[in-house]
Image (cartoon, rainbow, N blue to C red; front, top):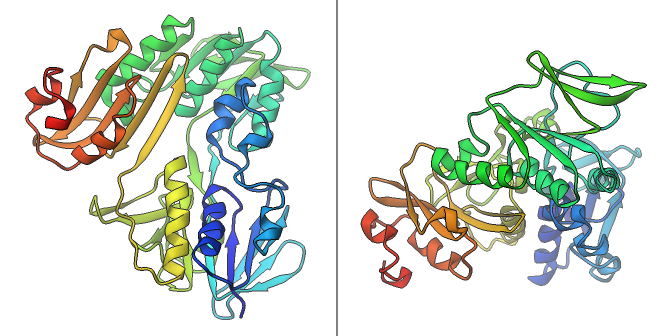
Length: 401
C-alpha cells in the first residue's frame, strides 16, 4: 500500500495527517515540504511572534517528535517537482519518487510582489514564511522608518506591531480605504482611523512607482513625485495560489486556485487540495471560493482526511477570520460583498461594536469588535432574514434575534 502523500507542509497539511491518524488510518503517510521547518501556524508571524510576545516554539502545530510517534514520514526541505497521475507517483527535488494511493495538495500561496524598479533591494520584505517573520522581527527591533505597501490584513497587522515597537510607519494603499474590498467603506473607515490615531501616516488612493536605494539597500519609496523615506519596506499586496504543480499535472487550476468539489476532490478522485490553494465548492454558499485564513486551513485539512477515509463530510461552513491590531480585537464570520449594506450595533467610536452585512435583509456576514463570546451566535444568524432595526438595537438581546 502506497498510502497518502501530502505536498506542502503547512497548517492544512498538519491537519490532514493528524486527522488521518486520529480517525484510525494506519496506511503510510508522507509529508513533503520545501521548508526545513515542520508545519507551523501563520497568524503569529504578523502578530505575537513578530511582536516578540510569542516564542518560536509556540508557532508550531506539533511537537518535534509528533511525526515520528505517529508514524508520519517527513521530507522537509524537499520540493515536489512532478506528479504522474497515471502512475500515481510524485517526483521530488532530491531525485526520489513517491507512490501514492491518495495525494493531497496543500501547496499554499506565495506573496505577490510589485514589479517596479528597486523591488530586489535589501530591506524590501514580504511576509509569508517563518523566516520572513524572523527577518522582519530583527529589523523592527531597531528604531527605523517602515513603509508598508498595501493596506490589507498583513500590512495593517505589521504596521500595528511596528508602531508598538516605536517605529515611524507609513502605509500606502491603492484603494480609497484599507480593507475596502472586504469590509466596505463604513467599517473600513474604522480601521483607517484606528491606525491614524496610533500615529500611522496612512495614505490612500496611491500606488508605488518604485523603490530608491543606496549601496543595495532601500532608502525610500517613490509615490508620484515624492520619495517617502524608508529603512524597511513590507510589500503586502496579496498572495497567489501555488497551482503550478497541479496545472502541470493536467488538473483544473488557475489564478483562483485548484478547482475541487465539496469533498475537496479534484476531477481525479485520487487527488485532493486543501487550504490556501483550494478553490473549493462551498455548499452553504452555493459556489466555489478560495479562502486564505487560519480557520479554513485547519478545517479543510481535516475535511480532506475524512474524504480520503470515505466519511462523506462536505465543505459547508462559513469562512471565519480574526485580527488583533493595537487594542482592537475582531472576529468575522460569513461571506459578503463590500457593497452589501452594513448595519452597526453599537458605536464604533466606543471601540466596541458589532457589524452585520445584509442582502435583502438576510445576514451574509457578521463581525464582533472587542465584544467576546458572541461569535457562535453571529454564526447562527448567517443566512437568516432579520429586521435591520432589531439587528441595530442594543435593547434586543442577540439571543432574541
